[in-house]
Length: 54
Image (cartoon, rainbow, N blue to C red; front, side, top):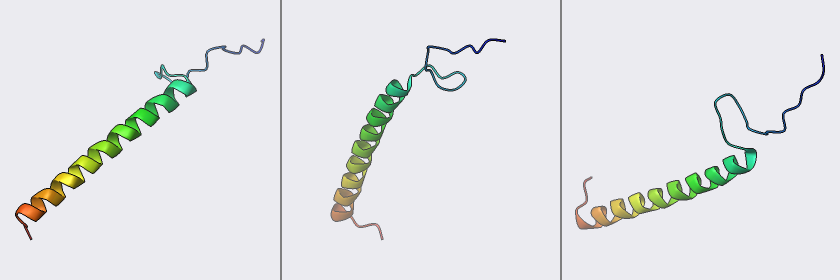
């Protein structure tokens, strides 16, 4: 049998992203998650200053 190499570098079964696309998606996901977390922490601090709950 001959060694068949795929020119397509898509990763994993059912995964349709190339490594570069996966890195770009990861970067965007992490930036969105960090922004969401900062907004949530800021909201908690503002509510705590308004009406402490402990």
